[in-house]
Image 1 (cartoon, rainbow, N blue to C red):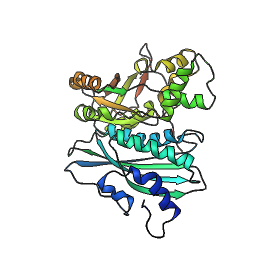
Image 2 (cartoon, rainbow, N blue to C red):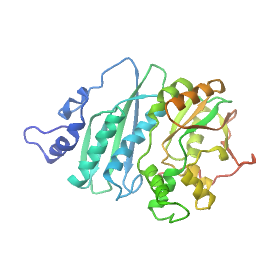
Image 3 (cartoon, one colour):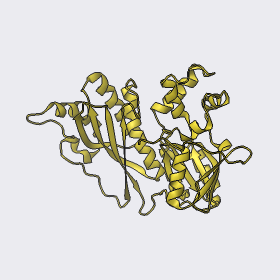
Image 4 (spheres, rainbow, N blue to C red):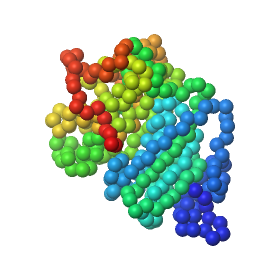
Length: 331
């Protein structure tokens, strides 16, 4: 991503107009070089990348500002789950056409989030495509040496916890697609679910507490049930989940109560971008206090168990429930 000089191209003009104003970090060199410089600080560097694709992660008529925020925030969610503080990101933007009415609000929202989360743009690339719109971001974060929280590390006896509420984004997508009409939801509840789909809330404020307390963590992108299975597999453990304890928003509770959604949709739908973590019992109260201080809701939903069996999902009476689907899958 380089800004214009002699013989500037249309791509150079696009970058200079929309993205150079966002390149406030000195290491970005105003986007006039072929690479950026991320200063060494003695910390470990955490790297994550996620792409969002039109028709898969957002709808063609979604507002460009919400698309920009989602593109960055899904990566910030990964950094938070690793206990990392954001350091910067690079952006790849594949466009069918370059229109000001789309690019201006996209760049404005991206810049606002970059500033709010302390994650400046360092560079990237813009390309044209005949296919769907695609935004790919690679984000960098910092942790003290050896302190990144991995999926591998959960231990038998750990509490399993999740931030926020689960299932809202999947339900919001169903609202947008017209699969949920009235069903007892007022306008504010419908808008809440739609916003949860369009604009994730990365739990960056909890990153330090996760780093200090959790044995294992990951963000919930493909569905709570499936992502828990991935965490357990990486850690070589099993788990038991109390489905009645899984935190639901008021809007989700309405839809589950009137049978317009079931618990499987809630825990396997994906796009939550909450943090799933395991915390030793002797650190739980301190972790809960840190979460309250960070103003992030955290709920204990089960326990890590010894063994390598698939996680068990239990109803309110303690009986196992078989989930036909654990998570969203791209393939």
